Image (cartoon, rainbow, N blue to C red):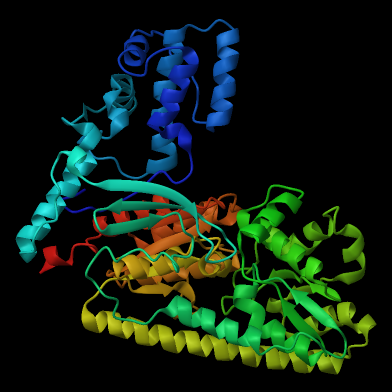
Length: 558
């Protein structure tokens, strides 16, 4: 914070080892009370055990090892206090500037040992404010007070005595679609609120602000474009039908491959939308520990094979077209090797020896090499080079039509936002993270519906020509370069705020997100998804981010 303005923002997005619940669990394992006794023991230590900043699982193993080797309990709890500090500094702060005045608030701040560890590591006085455990609640009360004063609205405050509030909670399973989400209904008087759904379509939550978006629903319009292509595509053809997983690069390249495969004489059967059963099947079938989108792709393969197909199309995509020929433009290693990994699944191995079509494709190398790469795969099925060449050219025309639609819609959206003096959210990320609503828990739509956000995904922005070499002179990941270009675009558009949607175990994104912050010279909210079905934590982070940027308090800007 500088001069009363939030200049940077970060939240714990991955590791539980930096939380108060971790300390509470370890205190219970050691047979001590987290209140009072933990801090008293830790502060008496003269030689804290170095626990490091590892995952909670490994930390627990280390704790057991030290106990068996006779480590003193006070040295262990002191080490745990230091481990929380180091996790926070290295996994949340991550090199950001730390000011001279440091406030420590939240439930963990009740633990004097952790406050002392922060003071020792930072060499600064740590201020623990009164009522630190409910600072967030106090802040919300102040926000409500300020809004009521600014707008003159009547307050709906029900008082401090919860025993006088008529509220009920029930749990049930939503059967509005195949996800079968575990739901909670909170009923207070005549109002009802629902939590736990992935799509928000059947139990749509009420808007949390009076703000209305000034642009159309770009995510929905893009989805409708793809849905129309799928519905118009025949599933049968003279050379049989090809199963096409609705996963990974489907969300970007389907227009191209639809034209290519159709010209070759194949019908195309696209797998259903991702749901809980498809995701579960994918998780069960993966033979390694890839990222969640790759696991989901396995589930789509399983759905296609179970439904009956003549062939399965999973190209070995190496790189992408780019105007920035000074740097490579690779797809990620898991995306490149997906067909080989899928082919090794024991349940499918025999069937895929006969059905898998996995041509190596180098978009960057141009039509001549693509024809030969595709002919090597499809030639034995009777497909000629002429058919392949014509299919590639029609594919690029289809892809260009999609790009033109996205650019026109994006240009119109940006103009409307700027004309209205409104704020907007730029969604950074890979297409399969942005547009598969099971993977991202439909967060893009919820931002629009619940907060009135003007949501603009990255591929609606004119960023292809933006050079990112001043940010990273060797960004050889195709999507990484686009993400940095979009972040750099946002630098000159301060009312366009960034939410980076990614997933755990994404190697490229693990460091691209650092450069995104550098490119934008502004805070970037990173949401990492891993297949868990509860959206509450993600929405809380979105709300905190947007509020820190002033987006949720337009009445304060009037």
